[in-house]
Image (cartoon, rainbow, N blue to C red):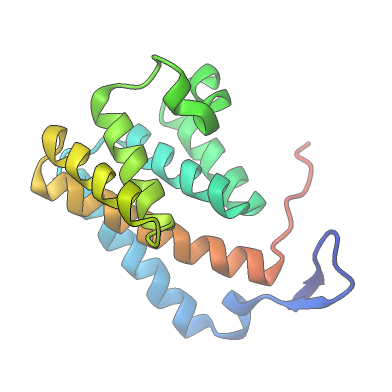
Length: 160
């Protein structure tokens, strides 16, 4: 299966369909990460905030679509979703959420050493070791899915 991604004249291969065993392994990994996050006491809203923030950074329209719907189903508010890209400039997020978002950003752009170290230190102040690990793993997984969708040109179609 393939498509032409918006803004591109190049037909893209849906790599999830082209190499289904590899994609299935990624899905199983993500399932294990969701279980670890739940076991660490991270609520679904926080996991979806991390998924969304990483997807914003990576410009993955498909994952933004999927995880916005998941966040709303989990009880997240439209207000918080609307300001997520500017979470540092609001008082809408708890200290734990702020720490998780900073850690997710640092996991997405790990070459920014100072930001990475600052985010990690802040996370250690308000999250348990299991929660820090889970947040990083959630970020790792959504980064992988972002790359699959962006490189495949997965479309976001209008909802009815």
